[in-house]
Image 1 (cartoon, one colour):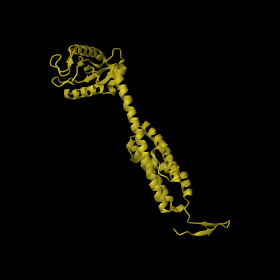
Image 2 (spheres, one colour):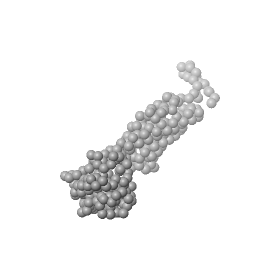
Image 3 (tube, helix red, strand yellow):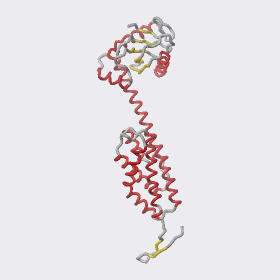
Image 4 (spheres, helix red, strand yellow):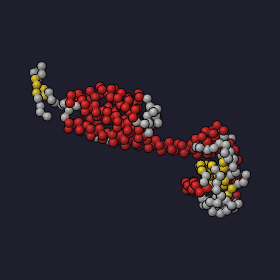
Length: 305
């Protein structure tokens, strides 16, 4: 770019073609609300997953994104994921709003694209060299990469925490379902949550094993062979289960003794669990295993009822 000089009113020489990039960044900051309006409208119209999100929070995050880009441009270095608290904040907000991770990442890319487009449009007015604009563009997509890494971590940690919490709730409910005196309302809540029929007969299951994790896996494999669904949890060193459906009889057992109670509806499942516990105790006394027929034609021990 050829420099052209002029004399200002105070007699100083000024370069009329000098880059005014700091002025441009100040303009970008001032225009952030207008950019946010367009971004929110475009995002809500084109990206699924934001159905429960109002335009206001999206405008606010767009304004934060603009401030982030100005900060990164001034720093002149590509940020790391740990340098972006904005990603943590946005991910937490969108998790609370039930927005999927893919939609969040798409929305952030769109927001950066709107900011970059605004910069490119204003570039000639502030004499921004194309090389500088290219460097800014590279920085912005580095921001996108770092943001994606940080947001993905937040979502992953949330999913792990949610899975653990759900597992705990599920285990507690199974324990209550086979216990006497449980509130019917709580039983029905769990039945709806875990797809357990409330009026169809179920069977309680009881088993012991030194390796609970392996034992639960083996029970699930048996359930597949027996064409039933089983919910299990460990309660006071005993594996407790709810068997949904009537098991096929002539299938291989899991390799250890299991007590299977009589069929009862959910509200009376405690009676079925009593049977399962008694059968398991009898099987242990008789040294039965899941590979030995302990009662009738079952590879599992079973109480009649």
